[in-house]
Length: 402
Ligand SMILES: *Cc1c(COP(=O)(O)O)cnc(C)c1O
Image (cartoon, rainbow, N blue to C red; front, side, top):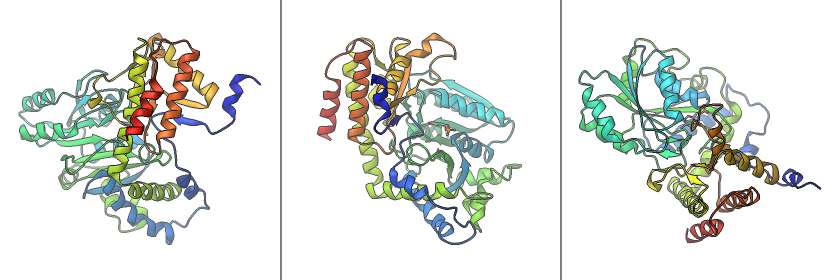
């Protein structure tokens, strides 16, 4: 038997930063015949989903649901608040910040991007400068990515609220929590976020296909003053449906709703604070291992300061093309799939082979993380990448300490 066939036996592990691992209970809930979308169990279930989503986002605000991925959530948030010719300010810390800005441009908005590079968080002082310079209050919204999944940088969203308040600037604060919701601590109301977007397939542990936009009364007033909003993206009927179909502007994402119901039950049974705590411990275990490997001089984490790292995803590099070689090795030999590098090098640049990412979001526990790290240890050994010793032991010590 060749060594590569080992991977074909046993359960594969997809450790990419979305879609995340789906709990068996979520999959079981989705495996059913098509339900009636006009009355009965599905219709009755929908009402409970909204308050439970609010609890995960820590908000008493409004929720609009869409059939779509994270890009749909981006567009939905903008379509309700930003008209052609309006200006948005985008402090970018990776590919997803730029992506949201591009989405705004596509809708006819003007964008002012402050690029903080690929390994540093947003500096609120520079955002404050831009807000103070905007004496005419042209900036309608600040589009901030909480966790930029391409770089694994976590930004301080509350600090952006503080600089908006200090500048007495009326712009909406909009947060992309597609990677972070249900992983990294996020407090929509406590941090003064006006609009928050997320998707089903990361911390919420459901397949891709549902997008969520949370908004407060201030954002609702901005929506009410818009000259026009496309009927499909309009969040008003979705957030205040008289009939079940209005949640979706048509047919509901029937099976996703059954999966989401179970995923929300799991999050609430664990407790959102405990969910954040679990992600924190597991992330620190991963970082402890990476610190040991880094002693060999080849592997490096993208974000140097642990306080600026997401607990949901870790971006890493090796001398090119060893990042790609490692991904190939662990997939072929172990059935373990790591994330590709994203936005770190131009397509076709040989340097792209350096980067890879670990997803540790959602339905992940200690044995999965230790298996992930053990798999990387094996891959680095097989590829003869120089590395420090004791990485898995260091991770185990973090998990043992809880
Ligand atoms: C995944 C992700 C997106 C894009 O979501 P899609 O479902 O791929 O459209 C946007 N922003 C962040 C921060 C993400 O992690």
